[in-house]
Length: 295
Ligand code: SD4
Image 1 (tube, helix red, strand yellow):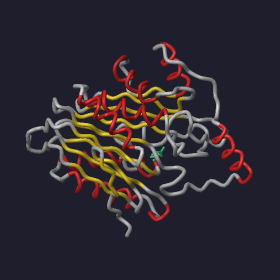
Image 2: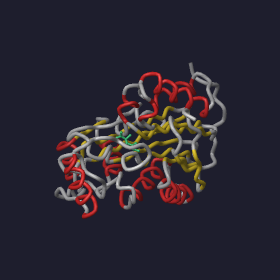
Image 3: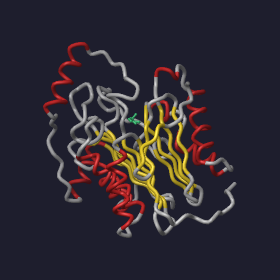
Image 4: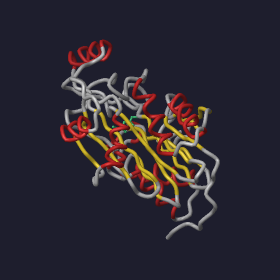
């Protein structure tokens, strides 16, 4: 079932996860104001955080996995269903740009590891040797002393940048880029680079993006759940709530994890919901707290 074709909004709109969504949104708004596409906007916005992420959860400055390697995941998708994703990539400063090249230049959707790095080199993108920032190295060595793996909610581990934008042509795009979870197993990939899990967009319905403990979202294809709820007539807010409800139903002990969900439809309505308190998101240049499922 497709929702009745309400007129697509042509007022540019940008929605993104966490506090670092603010600089990302500012960049995306600039791109849209110059006539750039929604895809250009989310790519440029994510790149800002890839270069400078004070939370050390996006880009090459991130905390590493338990072997001391920073491995990165990213994805882009447009409303026409075209998508590109990279996972388990090392040494690439802008995985979101590489994901876009997968979408634009290959017949594939997802490239991983050494193959994705080889594709980066073929596109003229530098692949740097493995390295940690001094701060990441110091924290990792301190972690090694105990080797206790306990993801913490809202801090340390959970600060992917995911973005949704609607442009003046009424087109929508989503993107996400992350280092995943700090001290994860080597080879672990989360929801962010998986279409339907971390991001999903489908014209003329809308899009959804997630952040948080990726395993809970992978088990339920969270972003796809929210978009399908909108297709069935839910508002973006109702869609986020329905998707979070399903995630909680399928993943026990919700007090032990966080998932934040954002959605937007083609008329420009938005929604936000999270498992727990503490999920901040940015709509345009405003920072908000998402309502939580657990009060
Ligand atoms: C992951 N969902 O790899 C990502 C992490 C995240 O905010 O969203 N952090 O599981």
